[in-house]
Image (cartoon, rainbow, N blue to C red; front, side):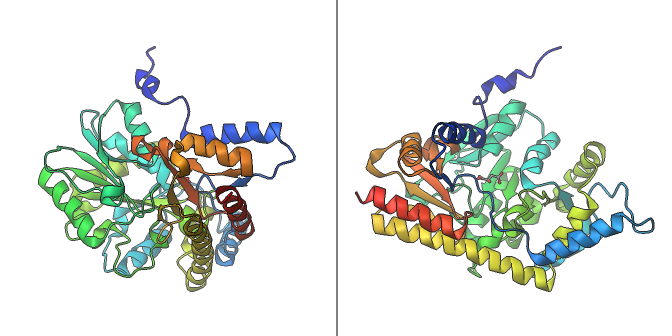
Amino acid sequence: MKLNENYSNLKESYLFSTIAKKVNEFSHNNPDKKIIRLGIGDVTLPLCKAVIDALQKAVAEMGVQTTFRGYGPEQGYDFLKNAIKDYYKERDVELDPNEIFISDGAKSDLGNILDLFDTDNTVLVPDPVYPVYVDTNIMDGRNIIYINANEANDFLPEPDENIKADIIYICSPNNPTGAVYTKEGLKKWVDYALKNNAVIIYDAAYESFITDANLPHSIYEIEGGKDCAIEFCSFSKIAGFTGTRCGYTVVPFNLGKLNKMWLRRQTTKFNGVPYIVQRGAAAVFTKEGRKEIEENLEYYRENAKIISDTLDECGIKYYGGKFSPYIWLKCPNNMTSWEFFDYLLTNIQVVGTPGEGFGRNGEGYFRLTSFGSKENTIEAMKRFKNLLNK
Ligand code: MLT
């Protein structure tokens, strides 16, 4: 038996597990302190009524002989794939339902998709970046090239013709920086991918936070996008499914063998998302569902505004927070990102995410999320202002 030694090249634990461990230790030693968590991007509002109604109806169906369901199609039920197809159509993106695959979340599929690619490929990731892209490639032993995302390029790096990559990761609105590519910005990446025969792994998990009609929600809004990109999306952020688990992956037919390979992979290694959950997900796209999730998204956008306003008052530079639940701020007084993490946890019991956890260029930055409750966000910012304006 030989171990996959690539695992020894990973950091000891996943970023958010490391943070949870530190916070639990602090909480254990300071049981009287109220900790406010604005670290991991986990939602706090409950599922909306339309989703709950659909889930309950589906549960009832499962208890009746004639409507009970066993194994479903591994790639998802048509009712959900068609609802997603219609959602894309609103932005003039035409998808075939067989290009859509329902998953248990974007994170899983972002890792699973690598089954389709040889370990010999070179991977291009922006730095800072959602750690899953890097870790899953380290696990396979792929060569990773980093491209700088920094203040000089507003955290939206452009392709460099001198770099040859086969697999390119793009997340927009970006985790962790909240930066959003324009259509023109994305077109440069599409052109680069087509020229280099590369594939773009496009993470659109936060698309629902975009409110500017000119900004793209999907890479398929860009000419040529369907010829070079696989898109990943999630019900976690749009509709609070972080604990319910559902997402989808789009593998266009134009990508040659990849659509069939993904179907082969999924039918072999995956048994599909539960019928009940898929019914809940489909309700997100109904008239009532859309109205209710929009109210929830607005609630988180207002939280982002509370955070941004506080940072403005404290004179702290930040990015994101406008079309994204993440606010990416510069640590004050030249603190490192982990120093700032400890400073906030120890003094005001507010938890954020140290930028260094997202890559070397994240050093000196810190991420806050707007997914907390309004009360907690207001309280956290009150504490923050008192501490920083001292
Ligand atoms: C984050 O905090 O970066 C996200 O919650 C991670 C995820 O969605 O897996």
